[in-house]
Length: 206
Image (cartoon, rainbow, N blue to C red; front, side, top):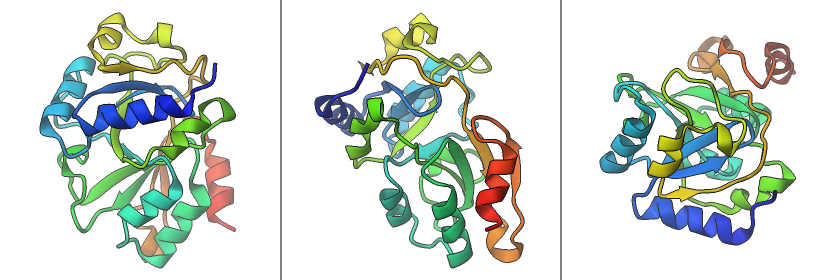
């Protein structure tokens, strides 16, 4: 099942007016909203039953947009971002300008960044120019959703837009901490998921 350009346009409109969208990514199904809208973020968290102090990721739909939104990234960290993304990873990056505070939880000096590697069936989403606050489309602590049917019915019913991209890999993104990478080249895997630690190491140790 492939998404069409009109689906990406509808998704962008939903986000722009403060809606919450249920959509397929390169890993699992997710929920997305405008990252600077308190009302939208509160609705997204309420749908999941997620604590409001827990951080979420900011998803960009292309690497170009992510780098443009975070111009303060230093050269070594920027090179690491370019080596790892796009891909099934969430990168914890230094956030000295305190951008996207609603996504950062109790630590505004850190921002989690996602740039999916869109498979052909979902490639239309790569045209979205709007960053989103993104979290997995499951009840807090529940299993990740590989298909739309795996998403709890209250979440499906509560979303303003539902996009069906068919079955997904079903493994959440790997979370990589790059906050000290600029200073000392150190990094760590906080959660191993769709990308193995060895693959992260291979990309960063070139």
